[in-house]
Image 1 (cartoon, rainbow, N blue to C red):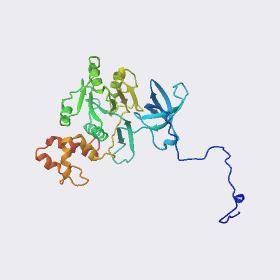
Image 2: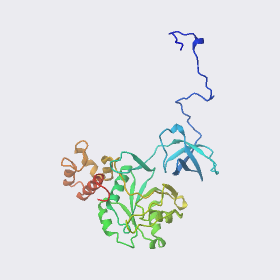
Image 3: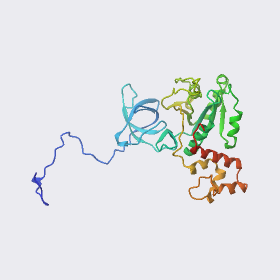
Image 4: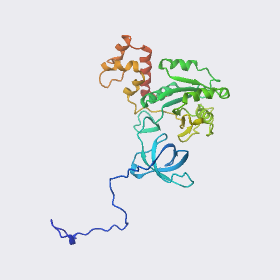
Length: 333
């Protein structure tokens, strides 16, 4: 093997030819200023369905995005074939900054965050009053996730023909959460209209256990049919029928509904307690005297003195602590 000195002649330098004829790699990425902007409607095995104007096109993520992925609700920049014709494929080259991100983890000890939806304004927590029985701890967890993401929560109680909603609503009265009560019968007498009124002009993500009637409700709202299932008579649990999140427009283009797959757990490993308390504005000022890293449920917490001085309702502090405690226990406890 020939070795070169400090000052080799140019003729002594051997350069390996580029047999592929492609351009050398560079860190400079194209700006794609002419890219069209669209909204991701659903993601299916690496293919993203994006609404651009009045057309839905299929696209894939550009390599230049690296590990950054796009999810339902994302505003994205797309180049390539935007005709929407069969067998065409465009390319997503940019994901625009998100105004909100709803996340969850598989469990409380799972550090991997899963983005449920981006850019939503509201979280509709769908819960059946019976068949299956309501699980307040699951509702609490969804409320915590909504407050952390900056979404306004909406409690949607289904199957009121099987059980009264009064007891469950009493549990959440101090939180001031908006709610709608529905059943199959009043779907024909304005029940769906009451829900739709809460969704106008917003992007609303629907979450809930399998079997609570979430997809049935979504079908009625958007006048479109997705598969629905039944509740197992032995386990009391529903069967997953929605396998991927899907954004659907409300009639008259007056808002969006994002139907998500039924969940059996809603991990809160990623939740920062300091963000949850923002949903309790009358308590925020009272945290100024809290020690660093205060969990707001310990002897040194300044909120006790704040409430004792009459600055806030004690029931509101109890509600905050109940929600924060959901990180420490399972939904079924």
